[in-house]
Length: 115
Image 1 (cartoon, rainbow, N blue to C red):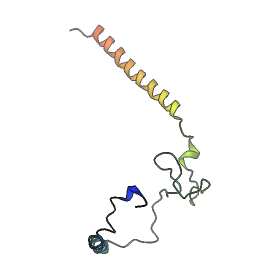
Image 2 (cartoon, one colour; image 1 turned 180 degrees about the vertical axis):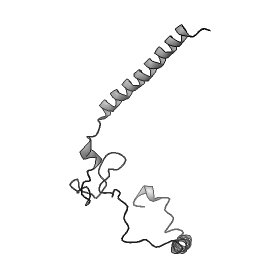
Image 3 (cartoon, one colour; image 1 turned 120 degrees about the vertical axis):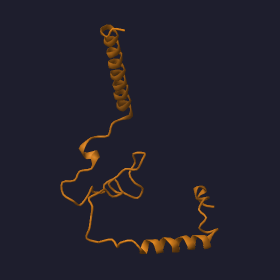
């Protein structure tokens, strides 16, 4: 086994079942409307998005242009990424603000509202 993460891939061990599943999917897919080649919804491609850990998608060079449509700028060009330290400080400040205002509201409420 070359890749230990592929231990659950039963395609080679249960080829008959895999072929049945492929045939069932192809039958289901044949019932769907065909894709129109001229239709295009503006969206991102894998080359334009970073993966979940903040690195570029594998196989895409860092110099890949954003998109062919004019006026589009990737999010990283519009706003620089926030460092973890800055994000943690902002989150701490936000929590302090929320808890502080809650404490202040309770203090004012206890002093002004009769029991």
